Image (cartoon, rainbow, N blue to C red; front, side, top):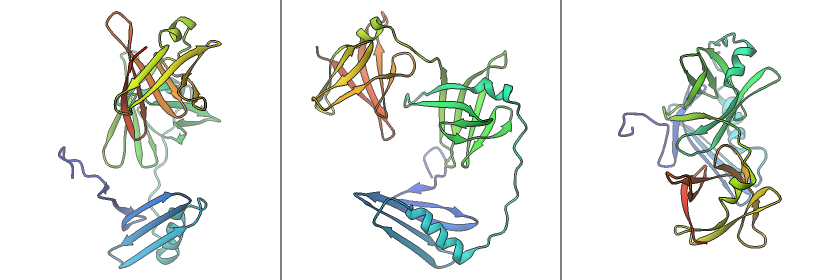
Length: 256
């Protein structure tokens, strides 16, 4: 239990949860060409361990298959029918949404009549709410009924908030304002932002040359990382920041 009262499933290297009605304590891992998964069912006094010398099939999937062979078939869970939402209504949510904490993008798209959030299939629940993989996505609306913000709530109760952004195509002048050498004291490294042919790049060594792909104002996707710039009250670029799934807001200062 966290200080805010939320109960979470993962801590101290263990996930304590349920699997198809069975109490389940498990964890998996992988590195350097192998992968493993260990599951314990304490009420049933059964443990299942899987070790693989490759990346496919997944160790977790193999463990689940063994569990199903031992304990299945399971009682059927009641099915919840998705709400009927027209495609015109779904189109209101289409766009790019910025995580307010990590700055990372999430996209709401409709593919062949199916709505998705960053690739995950969404199940409409009505009222601007959707389910996906045990999580919930919900939108808030302005006075005209247009979505203006979103948040996801995962199975641990963690809330991630998103703001709707506009796709951004920077001008050559805007890109030029980011040029220079940027230094991170934390990483003890300097990277150069350069502009060539109407595109911006991050460079370090001859082999390190990544294109900055525009996301929204002052934000870029760089090889799976999010890179963004901050400005002072006069609009002058003063800082560069980098974030990823397990790293948030590494700051850089301009040194040249």
